[in-house]
Length: 275
Image 1: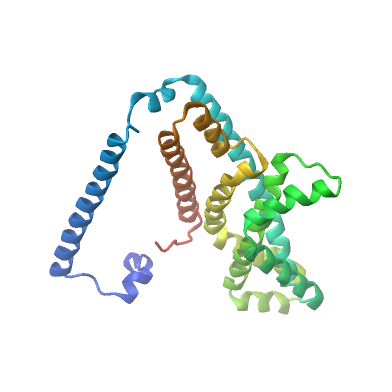
Image 2 (image 1 turned 120 degrees about the horizontal axis):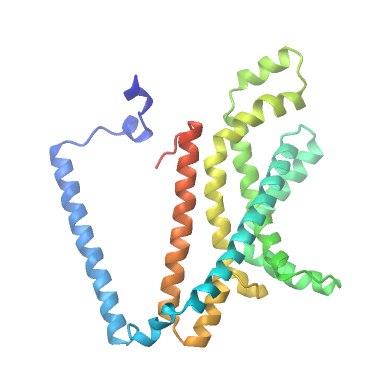
């Protein structure tokens, strides 16, 4: 029984590898590891030859002010990501409900809005909020000039994620609820949505990775996020390679933590993530 429960799509489609295949996989893994190590060594050597490993490019990380400034930028990134994520969740849910409401004009409008936000790059939306409100006499803080377009771009994706969750709920449950006299609204609210949200929680958390990456264009509106503060330090210390490497590691760790959180939530809710 436990073996049947843990059967994955890969197990169903492919046979278990035999001894020869496992040996080839081990050899391929070792060769790949050697190639990666050689590539890393070549990059490090190039850094050494060009002087990028000189202490003057790395000594700034021994100063508390450097990490405090980067920490302030990280807090800015987190604030934008969480606020944009919350707005995108609400707006994405509303777009999904409108599209599945059965009211044709509303459904058509929500579909157009969803497709628009999914198709337009977030950077273009940022430029829109940067230039258009100012021409209309509206002065938006840089926080909202970044948060709103990132939220709108993510809401189109989340609307489709929610819709996939609703479609994953067995149709028989909806028909049973309607047969006992529940309205379509109550059926959606009490039966469909709780299950749909449970199905898509890992995807919702994983979408936060995209939101975090979209915040890296904060320089357009001069918002002091992690990347913008790093650019200020690069200008001050002329340490482009070292700072970008450290910032890349920070973003990797953030996204890794989000992915681990997604897996943890999936395990708690019983939703299997195919990887």
